[in-house]
Image 1 (cartoon, each protein chain N blue to C red):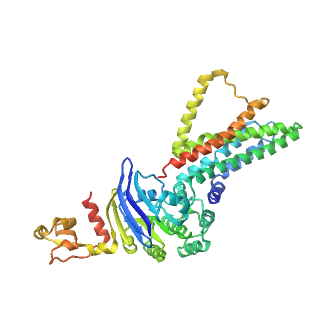
Image 2 (cartoon, helix red, strand yellow; image 1 turned 60 degrees about the vertical axis):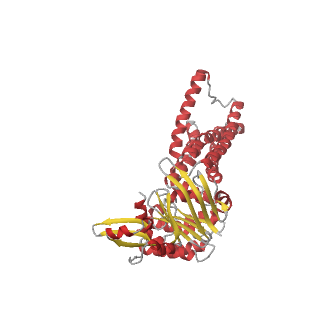
Image 3 (cartoon, chains in turn orange, red; image 1 turned 90 degrees about the horizontal axis):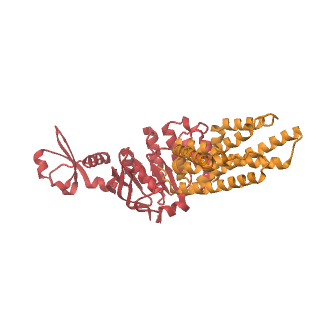
Length: 208
Length: 280
């Protein structure tokens, strides 16, 4: 799988420079005391969607067809993208943890539990996007997959809102540790389930 | 041993059907798949490579079921695709590195030799290559990992005649080793005429003819006839017919033509065009 990862590395270097630049700028801004939480949570969202950008390029340039003639199986082709997603989200998590530690030390509010909790939340935020989107893309291709994803997620949220209405409280309070731990573990499990489903979908897909 | 054996292969799409294809490629030989655009050449190649799933039939590569073979021996097949498929941002140098990590039997030296022989720049981005250069790079990749079977989809399209000739020589050289075989598809029939041992005509998803090239020349010929002479000829001997104000041109089976007729040699291109027209 080394060759696939190397090829994606070259592509990220050339096509995704702007994303990486944004990630670093946002993480840097988040060090400032009065920075909006947006600057903490936006980088993992971008990082998680880098594999999707790569797949779109692959399809546009027909690499998705050609790489199936190289000595790789479909499991490896899917896994390369999930690994890249995971590496990016993890890197953003580590960088954010460092930046937030600096911020808290400066403010004199450094507590290791808070950093761990915050890092885990960032990891979860980063993994949730590709977990939900990638299976659609491996099943239907980048374009159709994205449309199907938006439609299904739209219906899902509408359904949840109708069902639970105002009773639904999305916990963004760091005090509810148990709730967060559940979210984090679920998001990691979800990523691996999504990985498995994508392999199955891609194995069944015809590369035409 | 047979490098490739296809039996009763069928694949039905909504608007196209590959119908009961039978082909055999003996080891050490080159088979040319001739057909117009949309005849089923790329479909056949994608079925062999298991990129699309067959509806029925059997594909064997070096005596093994194709899916089984591809699981373990994909390295043994070098592929050139008509639609290319290399990322535009990569240079030949980077592609070489990617392939080095992809193929266990990758040969850097062979690859670099082909790059210089085929005048492929090392540091230019792939998206800035001409179509011919893109094709040549794919050919260089296919030839640099000790493949035993080359599967080439329109590899000479977009190449100028001099380079085409050079590439054809490279393919000829490749099959000097009797363990090496090539399946090549093209609509540039003259290339295949030079190169192939076997010729297969595909037309609208159907195999019109599959024969050893030399046998084709021995078996078929062209005659010019008057309407009176036409009546003397057994209809079963006629493969194709072209009528004009100057008379009628027939493609015929040589052994079924009465003596006295002058039978001219036929080119593969003429034979294909005649047969395709007859089957419209």
